[in-house]
Image (tube, rainbow, N blue to C red; front, side, top):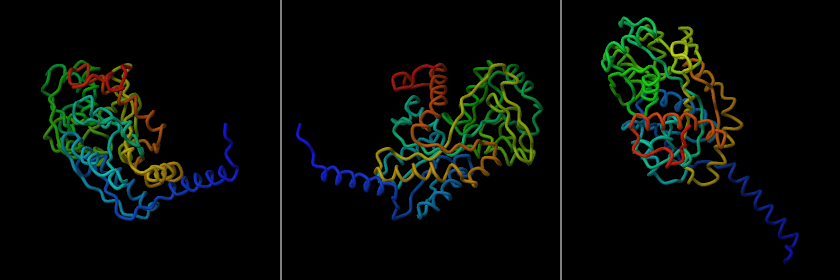
Length: 334
């Protein structure tokens, strides 16, 4: 084997180190577009704006939020996919949604196609219009059983977090409902608060203000752990009323195509590892909105989001709503 001169090895090492250093110092030279594929005011919009403001401090460039709701988040996500992979167009949302678009026949993409930069985990809550007679979760479940398919439930549409929540609840409790869809979680929560629908199962972040204003009465967290909402108190878990009930955590964040230049990914990875993990603005947002502070990136993020993707994909398969079998697109049955 021909030996490599020591000088050549040293030059190669220096060039490699310089390359890594350059990647870690990417500075965008124009504004970045962050496509939020849901309506203004919803959970994705809220946390994306907080996160963008934090990122601007470290990137030295403006991040422009562009709301593009439609087709359960797939319209805005598709536009981010179609944009040049130069690091200047990102999208955002729930990783569960991103990971199941292919199963539902909406978009040909998977979570593994993206660099995930998670910020919080949002929790779904069963909330009812304050003027309804339902004071407790057992009362609502009894009404749903007595009146199959007639209790109206507002969500942000098929594949939204609210839809995932009510589908999971209905299967666990053996009930049916009347699905009423909106372009985002905020409009869905407003619909329940105004009496346009009786119930919403959207995220706590989207219902918080209306819960504090006593327009929505929260009955249960769609999960097995209670949450605290400032200005209201404790909301009990659904597992208290349906023994053994569990629902995987749905993480939210900013999604950047993996095809972007390496220095873009390296820079964002570094910001997440050193800055976002200690962001007080993001932590305060989570505390005020019944969410969980959860900055993660890289393989850690991919592993964290998979249980919710897997659970929802197979729930939709069992319900006959999947267009593509999950096991054919890398999502084995749990």
